[in-house]
Length: 287
Image (cartoon, rainbow, N blue to C red; front, side, top):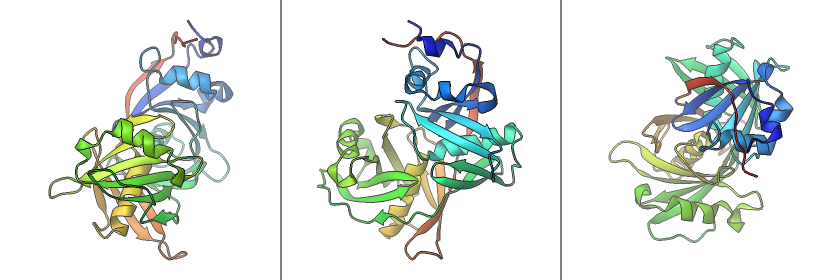
């Protein structure tokens, strides 16, 4: 059955984009009713992988707000708003350039987590986040077999980082759901990232995402949180290379923040590309 609100989107253009397997339906705010497309039931219908377009979330790009080239509104597939999504911001950087909202050499993007500066470097998007100041090297959470330590960082949104012997052996659906609402993280909960060494080079990580309520193939802010904890634990140095579940690599560069001891100024470099474009037809919505 077609939801009456969803049916009003028929004929709306969109782009399906991916950032290392973290996928999004992206709308130009000039082409769509922003209040309609950001309603939870509409988002859920669009992101449904069986009866909709299918995605981890949606992005609404608003051109030329005050003091920036574009404004990004990001929503998870369950309809909840998120302050920041790293891979969505990488995708938005590429889309903003395509829409001629700013220069590929230097873009400024407003998010609910603050102003993000970004660019396209050698064909790949890069973003600079606001300083990350809330970092805990040790979360008071009981470890399970195969887990070595658990830390916490707020990289735009809250993340637990679990250092493991082997992320391939982790039951992310079970353990991720358990930790995502752990009392230690507070009422909002947190995303959960599991990380382990990838042979002699770099790290492999897997993420259980809040708002998606399941494992995603990549998480940009999760890779930043993982890099921060790996450096904090003296297990690696900047830049940190991390491989996603899609097999793509992202690179996190960490600079110290001169304004606050122990804080980091992270930059994320990774994929942000259009998979296909389309026009919304009939999307069914469970009732």
